[in-house]
Image 1 (cartoon, one colour):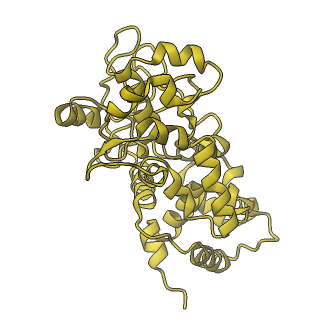
Image 2 (tube, one colour):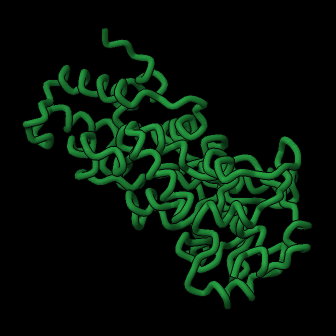
Image 3 (cartoon, helix red, strand yellow):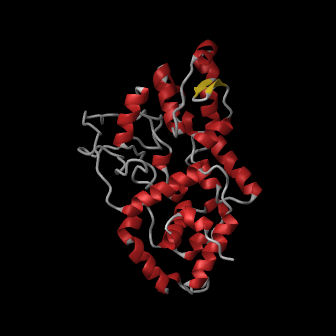
Length: 313
């Protein structure tokens, strides 16, 4: 059954929903289900098929919608660029066929396919910033899930520099899981009634640096030249006498790298010792974890922006 038949044509086209800045597809669909009161029917009809799991389904649900720039029909490319993590990952895919396949996998399949593949456990729980929640309630009358808060390695809010919350601070109940059968609107309280307003300041400068660099990659207007990143990366590796044929674990650079970030910091952002070895930098485009490159760019130049600007000629 088509979604517009399920909802009823008149109701379907009468429904308009504002899209918020940096809102994730998960959040958009969760609010839509809530406002239309179709949770019960969708749970029964789509029990084994997560309706929000593809951008094309989200596109069908949201047409027409009210956009920040005015009311008009929305193409799925708008969701892809503005409400998914596609721009964050696409910088690292040069091959046109790989990029085309990547787009199709997100549009027709799971928009979190790469997050799940790269961080099967670390990236499942959705995260919120308590200060962002307060600001959105005051501005829009409701909070929403941010796509930037769900990026690999982002465990603090890049705006407010507070730790993101993924579970109730009292009973440890998860707020939302990407594997939930139906998406959940961003809550203010857990199911036991505990307030989720738990503001904890971040004292780790690297966490804020990573969150800021994640944000920059997600919102960069033009694609970065990944060939240039790799060329610069190999320049630094050669400078530090790290050869591809050597065991990375035995190099002086590896010790310096761990001293710079620390195993605990790497673990907290979802990386292990095996993630940061050279094969991770030389892997297939479709499997590249941007976070690993971000960590190296911060290590060599302090930020992705400075690294990209670095001239090796």
